Length: 107
Image 1 (cartoon, rainbow, N blue to C red):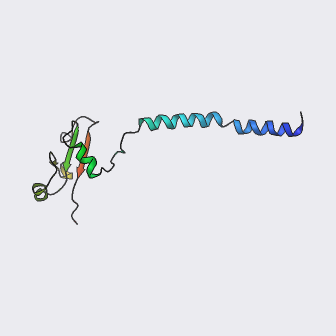
Image 2: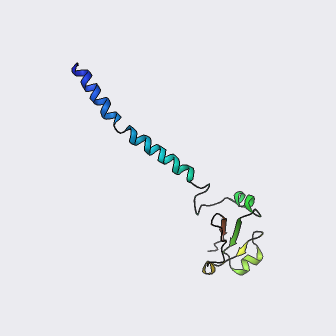
Image 3: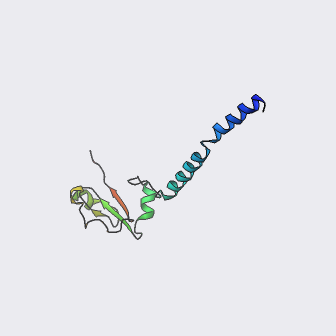
């Protein structure tokens, strides 16, 4: 075998060795991407996204405002909930439910 061909053969083998690992990594990444939920956990919704979800089954809306602000203006169906009141039994049992929390953050 000509020396140049030998170097090309060795170089091709060296470059091809990591190929199965790269293909496996791509397959695992694709599987993880498919399992990823529609929105990131604890993501932020736009006003339009919240409006489209209001009143739909398995969507729960919680208002974190003080009682006065809640009484004056809250989303339809929203339940006022202070962060200190979040305990087992207050939140839905269905772990797949969509939970929307909001407040005005008056500073």
